[in-house]
Length: 77
View 1 (tube, rainbow, N blue to C red):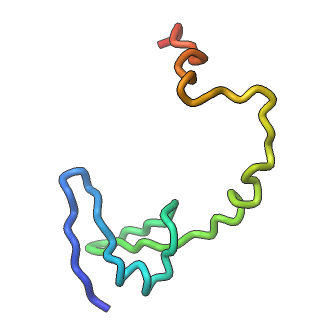
View 2: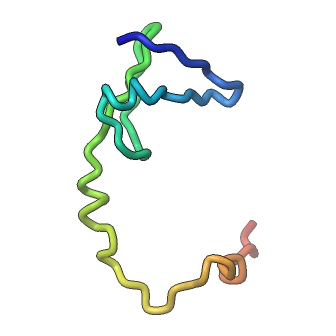
């Protein structure tokens, strides 16, 4: 299957829906990128390790997202 895209000035590329479906990409996330001369290959990676630990750690005192800057120590910057 051949399909075409464009690399943006920020080095991003959109993968067309037909190519994503053919490759089995169902969600966004991390991928393995292999580069050789004149070729870049993007492969799905198994995210089971991350999924297995999702929600496993409980936080006693969660910080609200809108207050996170109040908890960052900028003194070493």
